[in-house]
Image (cartoon, rainbow, N blue to C red):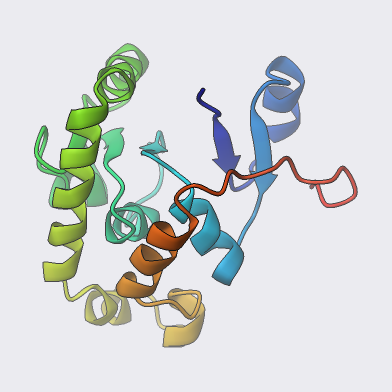
Length: 171
């Protein structure tokens, strides 16, 4: 069975949580906890139309996850449609949902794209790229994790399901 886990936060969270009690809203995660969420995933949906760099796209790819994203910014630069993920026409919700359904319905394609995403991420000198974009320290930018650390955690945690956060830990 599938579970939709939403990691992160935003102004629409309370509304979405009320509308969709079957979705696990994990809130903001960093470090090991974030790595475990990537490691437990089968694919990564990135529906942002405002994120300019999309570091999470590279983190997901480094974790061996196929990404579904709008055709803009980091997704346009790093996702090769049908090879290491899927891109939807910018700001076209129906196209995004269609691409997500396509990936969900084909486990073999998702696994193949995930392997290719990992290979793509290995070729990116993304730490150096982030220095040009983010002046904060390297430790803060990468949550203290290297791409291979994310993938290693994915392999170890593959069969360990995530649980709903306790209500006291929810945002």
